[in-house]
Amino acid sequence: MRGSPDDADEIFQDSVGKLMSRGLDQFRGVSEQMPGKAASPKTFFLRIVKHCAIDRYRRQREDLDAGPREGDEERTESPHQEARALTEATSRANRGERKKSTGRRSQG
Image (cartoon, rainbow, N blue to C red; front, side, top):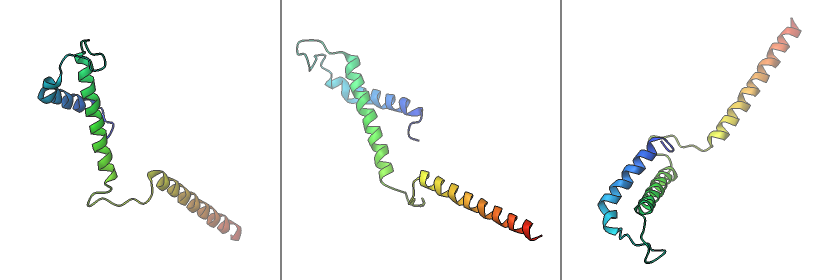
């Protein structure tokens, strides 16, 4: 589920895995922005975490953009539109019930 609390843990685990597999070879300890100064390992790791989070968001967005999967109903309206239509239909039905019940009383 998108936005679940487990996302943070999974992103952290992915980041540590990438740091261990590829990042340690790439970290040189020298700042790219200020040559001659030492680079912070925290900043380096934070950049890996940021990229993992972006990659995860893009994957989720691609899954949502792919549309309904096989067996899923195809939605033509948004949930907001469906809720609004349901509310309108219910109010119309209630008005119809009130008209019927008032008509019966006057005939009796």
